[in-house]
Length: 195
Image (cartoon, rainbow, N blue to C red; front, side, top):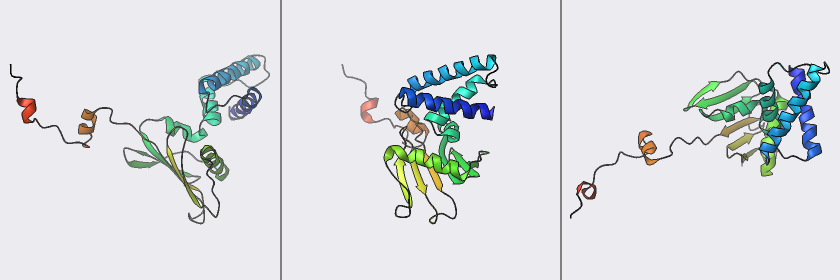
């Protein structure tokens, strides 16, 4: 399936170029393009022209994530319980849930980390080099990114993505989280209206 996904992703990227679809600005149009490409793939698979996709929905999501999102990191960005993602080295990708860090099973290559970093920084116009060994930027979806290059780090690019997770939609939520004290009755709330 990996070869089929790589080929499908390549075909989708070519369709994006030919039709001038911007996946970051027209996500609905891009998803429709991916659905069309997957449907076309399935028709060709029935004729034996290409290998069938074992899981069509997973293939479509993975293609959307690879082309419009942050590829293998997108699953962590999509998970509401994850607050932070950091890459200490290609083989050490961590996430934090409720402030508790955990090592993921995701293994990247140095090239993948570099490509992901370039993709994250491109919209902001920021760059990394020896004259600018670390950079802060904001992803188009609002997350904050901090990237540091070697020699500031030991050997690899270090990437930190901080998500903004909304936990409090109302004042009562802030009280429950301990951010605000519980309201106390005041003299004006205890009086009954005179009448």
